[in-house]
Image (cartoon, rainbow, N blue to C red; front, top):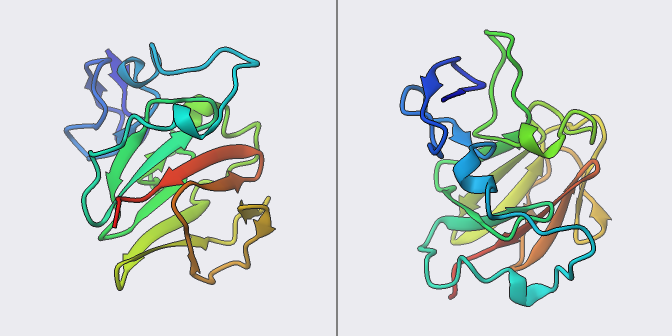
Length: 167
């Protein structure tokens, strides 16, 4: 059993989503057990292929750090990425990246928002304390910026790769 970082519910360790509050649980053992690359392994584009043929309109595949198992999420209603806190009353991100050492890497509680508008995926830096970079360019806070297929997003020091559905 694991504890949901948002609502505190005890749920099976293989769960990828909390059945009580809907939080996506990246830190679940089912997502991480065979999905991490050992240090020094090439992370070239061909490793990011587990999502191919699985995305529909409004969905994205997110690979966090050296993971080659994607998190596939629907962003039509928006999705936030950040680190969750055990303090009740704080706003929790849709995607909590605590399992990837988010605190020590400087990820804010609500770091970015991914939105889908007019057929395009956009990213918005939510005034993240340590900044956000998209393909090497620092994002201005609260300015929606288009995301391309295969873009690298850096949340302070946490690297994320994002893929879009085929046109």
